[in-house]
Length: 616
Image (cartoon, rainbow, N blue to C red; front, side):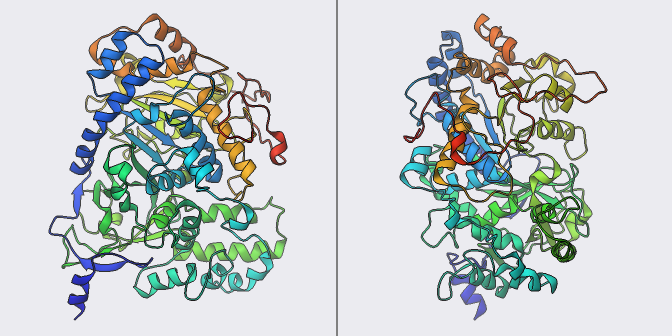
C-alpha cells in the first residue's frame, strides 16, 4: 500500500518533503565539469547575451571593430552579489537596476544592458534573498517589484523577528526548548492549522530534522515570494518553470553556502562551498566534487544508487535561501559578547548557554540528509560517510562575495562584476579571501586575478570607486589553470552617494521611504552617480567586458579604452608601510568611507542626480 501511495505522488504539496519514485537516471555525477543541462541552457542564453552586448557596445560609443568583435564571439559575463543581510539585498536591487536595460532614467549615461549580457548571476545571504526572490517571481524589473507589486515589504508590521519582550523567551531558552523559543517569532501561527509552526511540524513528522534555518527560511518566504500560500510548497527547482528562465531572458542563477565539518563548529576557507542552482546542488571543491539533481535533494542514496524511493520537496525555496543566510550563532553572539550592552548579565548567561546547546546539537545551522553519502568523487571521508550535511551562511568563511563557483575553470568567465555590500562599508577583505583561496587545495580549480592586501585597498581608495582587477592577461600567467585565464573583475563597493547605506546586518525592518532610498543609492554606486562623476564610465565598462576576447585574438585596445584602463585598473602597486593606514572620513565623490556612520531616518537623503522613484 505504501508503494502505491509513493507512486501516486506527482507533486509536493506543503512544506514537508514527500516520498516519490526515483527517476531511472543516476542522481549523482562528478563535479569535474558543469552539467549538460547547464551547458545547453547557457548555449541558448548566449544567443541573447551576444545580441544584448552588441547593442550595449554600440550605445556606449565603442568603435565598429568592437561591435564586430562581440558579434563574432561568445563573451562570458557574470555578476556576483555579496552577502550583508537586507543591506545587501536592497543596495543590490539598485545595483542590478543600474545594469538592467528595463530601467528608465531621464538623464545620464546608462549601463543598462549589462545584466541582459550576463550568463551567470550569484548571491549569498542577503544577495541570495535578491537572487531567489527575482528568480522565483519571473525576474521582474525594479519598478515592477517595488512600485507595482511592493514585493519586498519590510515595514515593521511585516518584519521577520519579533524583537519585543525578550524576557518572555527566557524560560524556553533556559530549558533548551528551541520549539517554544521559536513560538515568539512572527508568522508562527497565522490561522487554524496554518503558519510556520505547522509547516515545521509537518516536516518533523515526515522524519526530517528541523532547525532554526527552517523557521528562518519560512519567515523569509513571507517577504521574498509572491505566492498566496507564502511559498510553503515553492521549490528552488521551480525556477525551471519560470517563463524568464525557460526563455533564457535572465542570467543563470545560483546561491551559495558552506559546509561545516561533522562534529565541529569550525568554518574557514577550507570549508566546502556548495552551490544551489535550478538544476543541481553540490560542489566542485575537491572535498565533495559532485552534484545531485536538486529536485531530489534529501534522498537517501549510497554512491548514487537508490532503493526506488526518493525525496521531493526538500529544496523548498525559503529553506534554500535560509541556508545561504544561516548565521544565527553570529547574530546571537552580537547580543552576548563581553562588550555588548544591549542585555544584562543574567540574560547574556542564559543566551550563551542556549548557544552552546544549539551548536552541540547542530540546530544553529541547516541540516540536510546526505544525498552524497558513500560517493567516490570527493576527497573528504567525513563528507562521504556522515548521514547529515551541516550547511550555513557562505560569508562566515570570509568570502562574502560569492564568486568561488563562478571563478572555476569549468565556467570560463571573461568578466565578473563583484558587487560588494558586505561590511557596513566594504574594505576589500572579501575579494582578498577569494583570491587567497585559489592557492589552497580546495581552490585548485579557481582562477582569480591578483588583488592587493587590505591596507593597499584602503590607502589607494580602491573601495571608494569602481576598480578593475586583472586588466592584462599577460600579467596573470602564473594564475592560469587548465589554459583558463582569470576573468577581469569589475569591483563595485557600497558607499554613500544619496543615502548612508552602512546599515547593520541585523536591521530587519525599514520604512518604504528608507527602502527606496537605499535602492536609489545602490543605483548610484554602479552608475557613478548616474554618470555625473564620469560620463565615460559606461564606455569603460564596455572596454572591460571585451578585453579578454581582444587578448585572445591579439587585438590592441583603442586609445579610448587605454584611457579607461588608466583611470580604473589597479596599477599593481602595494602599500609597503608596516603601519596601519587610516584614511580620513570623506564623503566626496572620489573619497573613501571607512567608518561606521549611522543615519536617523530619511532626512539624510540628499538631492539625487537621477530618479528611480517618484518621491525624490
